Amino acid sequence: MTSVQTEQIRLFAKAPKTIVIGHISSFAVLLYLATKSSALPSGLLIAWAILELVLTPGLLLYMKIWAKDLPEEIPQQARWIGFLNALVCLVGTSWGMMLYLSLATDDPASFAMQMAIAAGSTAASVKSLGLFRWTFICYGIPYLGLLSLKLILLGGDFVALAVLVLIFLLMMLLLAKDVLASFMDYVAIKNENLDLIAQLQNANAQARLANREKTRLLASASHDLRQPVHAMGLHLETLSDSTLPERAQKTVSHLRQSIRNLSNMFTSLLDVSLLETGNFTVQTQAIDLAAFLKNIAEEFKPLADICEATIHIECAPYWIESDPVLLRRIVQNLLSNALKYGGKGTVTLEVTQTPNTLSLHVKDQGSGIAPKERTQIFEEFKRAATTTDTAQTEDSIGLGLAIVKKLCTPLHLDLDLHSSPNGSTFTISGLKVGHAAKPATSPEIASNNSLNGLHILIVDDDPDSLRASETLLAHWGARVSYAQSLYEIKPSDAPDLVLSDFSLGNGVTAFDVQEEINRHSPHSIPFIVLSGETDPKIIDEILTRGLLLIPKPVQPARLRAAIESQLARIRH
Image (cartoon, rainbow, N blue to C red):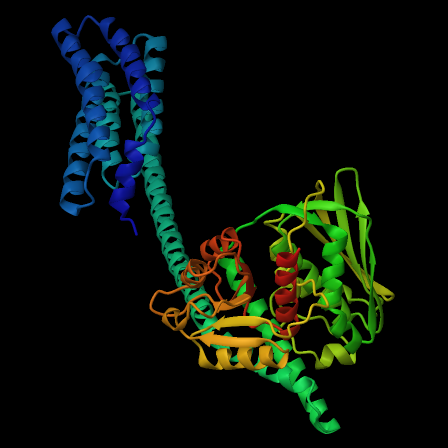
């Protein structure tokens, strides 16, 4: 909020230098005309020249400098305005006296110039001096008042001219009043805008705070919430191969699907929170695109079977440069969306090439997306209307396409949608063509290796997760030992593979476990970290150390594939 006086003084301080130039120019003309009158002594002219050429410009400059450093205190500002009123009163009086003494009525040309300067300088001063309530009055009345008095004393037709001068003065006073009124309106509007800006900034600050609190809540709660989901999924897997009545088998199947949906929801919510905060890094590497898509298709085969759909891949042996983790999330979400909403039929992953880039098309054979929904489906918690049974029964919170759209930005990819009654096609374009490289071992490429007799050490401070992992691995035929802390690890354990949570309490992490295991082992032992950790710095360090990270909650099939891929890498 700003006061009227503060704004008045600020504007005066910003007054252009042309005001001083105009003052000096007008003074020079009036001085020249005054020297032509023999009635004025030279001493008076010299004194007036010093006043208007040196003193007045100097005082105006001082006023501008003073105004810039003037504190926003009413007494100080009132003092400044009082000084300004005295200065302009002095200027108006001196100019009025000079016209009174030197008015050249016998020289039409000089007389016309004197009257023009009087009118022009008065009108020009309205803009700067009219901002103040009394300042223009202090200037205009002495100036034109003395001129009118001189004309009245001359008598005759000059009296009518004096009346016109007074009318002109009245018009300038009214104009100055309008200038002040407009200025007051400007200050009022400015204060309203400042108030609105303050309210908006406060609302934005509250929104940012709420968003930070939401993200903090998700981050802090995700680990604790995902632990029981992770444990439930592992426990449930041990029932899948058991001899159960048909009704019980159906119940197990429904439970497995519910846990899978819950796991997907956790992942989607955490993806959104990370994208909103920018709490992630893009790590580009060479990717065998055909193998990459085949791997994802294998992952989604169970969902495709449920949806009574097939996944078809059309991809030449291309290599691309991208972040495999972020790109995988994009393709996973698009493929999941196509299977759930595309109806029964074929979902095609097709790759086409432009001169410098590749485009990935995810096509379904559904009934299409209504035009009015083609924009809103990319918003958070929005889903397209659908009539497919799978989509209706499949739990979803409408974040998949929103995540795809957000992920495309850091990867510099474009997302397009084409939809018709014969199906929808989502296109990811801008994939950078890369060069073949030795592909990194994928944690999701399963093999036929058996876990029978394999010694696996589980390190987890959560008892439920520990028991679930132990039960499932034993069900798969592995020999299991476990520890809830670093100090329970026995040097004689000599495991073939380690599964460890990242945070183990009291500042102990999987890094400490790895160092302890390596200290007692003559060779490198495969190490898998199961964690809900989302801090990009920690994730980077995990990957830098060569550890395989699988986020919780993990699906049992993915866990087994990861174990077998780690063993296959060691064996080869």
